[in-house]
Length: 567
Ligand code: GLC
Image (cartoon, rainbow, N blue to C red; front, side, top):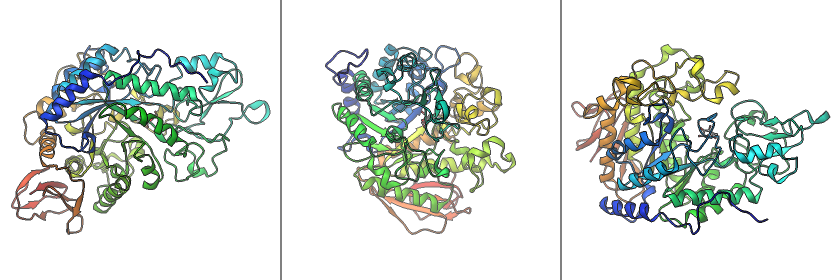
C-alpha cells in the first residue's frame, strides 16, 4: 500500500546539527565518559500546563519554560521530558492529540519549540517529547474523516471500528472496560462502534494498519529532526489488539491497566514488539537519542522484552514507586529492577512521582497499608502525617539518586510539594473523575501549578490566576524562599544532584551491606555508601565522612526516615 505521510518536513531527515554540536560540546565540558548519557541521566518531567506561564493566561507554556531554563540548569539535570504539548482539546491533559506535528497554541508555536530545544542544548540539557501512539484525540482530522466516511473505508481503517453484537448491533463488540471507567466502545450514528481504551474522546489507532505505522515513523523523524533527543512513549503495552476481539474472560482483569494474563486481548501482546523495533531503527539514525516506555505489564520477564537491544532503551518500572515506606519492599523493588533490567543489558529507572500518581510527600505521609488513590476521595484526613511525609520524601530522593541507573524527577518534587487532595469538585479536570462516575478523584492534585514566589499572583506561576487553583499555603513551598536556604528541599536536590554527578563512576552495581532491621545500606563502586533509615528509631552511623544527608545528623546517629551518603 502506498503511504504518503502528511505534512512532513523536507527530506533528508538529519540530526539537527545545531543541537547536536551544542550537546557534544557540553558533554565534553561535563567530562562525559564512554557511558551513554541516559544510563545515569537525570530526567526532569515538565507538565507544561502547570510549570510556568509566560503570557499570563493562566496556562503554562513554552515561553514560561524557556524563562526557567536557568533554574533547571542549576539543578544539574540532563534532560527535560515534556508531557504532550501538541494541539489538543485537553480532555486528558494533552494525551488526546489532535496533531502530532505541531504545538498547542495555548503553549506556543513550533518556532518557540525549536528555540527551547536549542537553548536547552546550550545549557547542556536535552528535550524529550511525549509520544502518544495508542490513541488520538477525537478532534484529530484522521478521526473526523473516519466519522464522516463509510464503514469499511480507508479512513475508518485508521481506527478500530466494529459492528455491535446482539439485535441490531446494539451491544458493544466486546466486554472490555476502559481504564478510565465504562465500556471501551462508543457508538456512532451509523451504528458502528469505535474502540477507546481510555476516554471516549481518545479513539484507539489501528496499529495493524501499515498507514498508521508509516505515519508514526514520520512523526518520530519530525521531532528528532527538530533536535529532540527522543521520546517517552505513552501506553506502549496497549498498541496491539487481538484480531479476533475476544471478550475478556477474567472479570478481575477487566479494568486494570496492568494485566497479570499473558494472552490478554489488548495489553502486552507480542505483536507490539514488531512496532517498537521499527521505531528503534529510526532512533538509531540519530546520535544520542533515547526511547523510554510506559508499559504496565505483569512482571520483569515481560518488561524486559521491551528492553531488548533493538527495542526501548529504558522502561519505567513502577514497583519502586508503588512500594510503601518499608525497607523490605523497597529492597525487593531495587533488586528486581537491577536484575530485570541487567538481564537484557539495560539499567533501571527510578521514579518517585509523576503526573499520574499521588505525590510521594503525601503517599509517605499515609499509613503503610493505606492505598493513596482511594484515600483522595473520602479517606480519613486525620491519618495524614505531613512531617513524616516530608522527611521520607527527602530520604527517598537521596536513595533514588544513589542507585545505578537514571532518575526521573517530577516537577515540584524538588520543592517538596505535597498532593493537593482537597481540590473542590467543580475544578476537577481529569476525565477519571467524570468517567468513574465520581468514584475516583483523579490526578489533578499532583498537577497544580508550581509556586515560584511566596507571594504575588499565582505565586509567580504567571501574571494571572492559574488554570487550576493553588491551595492556601502554597507560597510556603515557593522556589524563591527555598533558594539559598540550606535546609530547603530545593537545595537538597541541588546539592544531591551535583554530588551525584561527581561521585558516580561508570560502574552500575551495588553491594548490599549488612544492616539492622529496617535499615538499607549499600556501597557503590566509587566507594560511596548510602544508608537509609526506615526503622522508626535513630541508628548509629559508622565513622565516616558524610557527603550529604536528608536531615540533621547529631552525635553520629542517623535519625529515623533519613538517608545519608557517606564515604
Ligand atoms: C498514560 C499517561 C496518562 C494518560 C494515559 C492515556 O498512562 O501517563 O496521563 O491519561 O496514558 O493517554
